[in-house]
Image 1 (cartoon, rainbow over the protein chains, first blue to last red):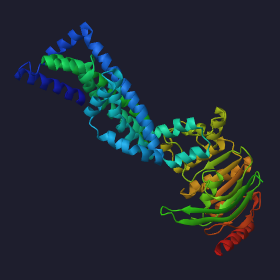
Image 2 (cartoon, rainbow over the protein chains, first blue to last red):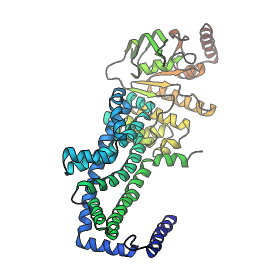
Image 3 (cartoon, helix red, strand yellow):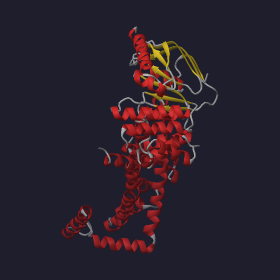
Length: 249
Length: 235
């Protein structure tokens, strides 16, 4: 209920400010909604959303998969940590824009460069969290699994992954928020489609209705993923903690 | 013999790289179906010995002889249950080959039937120890290793679990090695007691407990206690 009131107050504030401003600088919620429907009817909106979501999904999967595996390795193996740590520090400190421009210059204005540049920006964050998760593994449970000769696969599934899960969930949630923002920049700089491309077009035409008509549905989709997928998943993996807290004497 | 141990030397190396001798020239053997108790002062290397037998510590010189493919059921001092899996799943993960009815029977035998689907966070220490014991038995061990199974339990819970373990040993004849610092616990559970010296530890004396233990006279118990106390007093 509080969330709903808070959300409604944003809309009201927007409508009030739009009334007071030049509509070219801040169009109100209704004109923007009309533009959203018009772009949806023409199919342009769905094409742009589809292209951007595909890039988000691909770069997110690459960054999470590779970053989590490398981070876990660094947390468990001292030599791997020594080798990869300087790379990690460099990646953490190179501005996203530099990575994107370099990717386009070196690999050309193509899909691989776009997705690769976004993945490379998320990679160090995923590595850092997975490394922390690996370092926080309870050695007593490792020993228990070893003593009972639990198979490698079962150990990964029942001992390692549940301990990594909170770190991976945090990494996924922060990563998703970062990835979709960078995907828009990548599209703005060098792709012929997607929400970022449309926003660039709206900027060139100084059409804020168009800009918001593409930005808002995309934000709504990312919010829906967060609320309907990421948060329930996080609750599921920490179910046992809540249970223990509820039944503690 | 099911278990034959000869540990020439085992050291603990601290963070500064300084080696401290823990075990030296330790010899110990257990026949199939026998229950042994390793008794000694705190910090004398009892748990280290158990970890060596379980294959968790290989940094020693000497040998541990067990028949090939022996199954070892280990009960650690802390129950070491996976907190994110139910009690039943904890048993199944350690013993994937155990049949459903076998797991159910074990849960029943250890008074855990009502907790099968609970996460371990809900269990008291006593119940969690029982779950750890059920897990160790689910693999049908050739050798059961118990590390201070009654430590940190209140008196009533310790007595109840002690009786349960004694019954288990007597009924199943599973070869068992118990590590304890409590003489009465060793007498109540073992056929043979190995007294360890201060570190670097070796077996100072081996005392045979008259079996069956239930029929042991008060006098025999007193005599055994005095013998063990005399040996320990020499330390």
